[in-house]
Image (cartoon, rainbow, N blue to C red; front, side, top):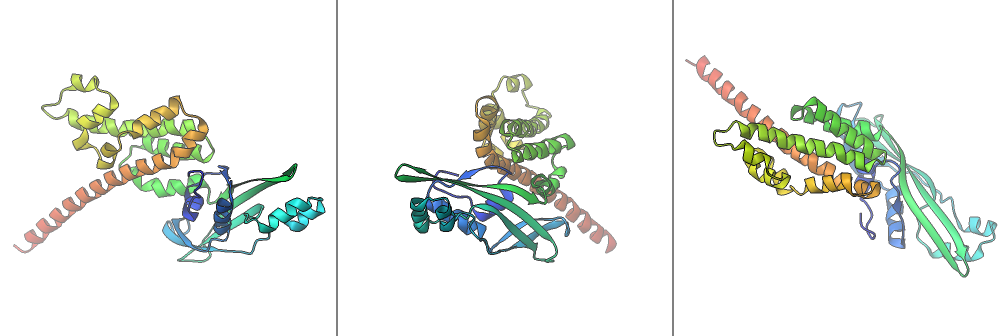
Length: 294
């Protein structure tokens, strides 16, 4: 998110980790935050009761601002009261977003957000400092994502599945650098898997491969790697920079982009594997049909 943009409702509901503060630095961002708090659309998420991905309808409720003109007057801040009269701002305090499963309204999910507003007078000027952050949710952030990525068990070894879960769990608790460690291990695992396949080819030169840097290794293994990975090989540099140079805040800023990229790569591997299995099943079915008609 840049200084002048605000995440979409679906990003705030599904992908924003707990306690990540989103500053509301101008009227446009305040208005966007208010629109989100009264969001009445839908989102897709894993439903634990249905045990599959479902569409959830958000139920809106009336919310009363906890910092109003009367509050300002009560503490003898008349100038601030005048400012608040003309300012579009997200109501301070806690707000609940409730989602109801399209299959059954009794299947519910809850997301709690806190809008912090600090208004002070500095001489003749009023300074309003605000932010919004997710402070709770049910089902838990990690649990929800664990269900969404369960399908990758078909293409990831058990230890790497655990690393993907740990990366998501750490990021949801504002641990950016640690989450990068596990994402990079998954990335390296994908490269090594392709390496093992290539090493079985008659023309493979192992000694030459071992001298290559990661970017060149990816080029050498291109035919055995998902296309999204080869087209975005610079991911590895970003992961490494995050581990060795970037701050926790910067790592968390880019975590979602990297997580999504890893999942796209895994989706590509999964699709390839499922298609290969479909071809095998189709061939066997055809052979059985031919045999039964002889």
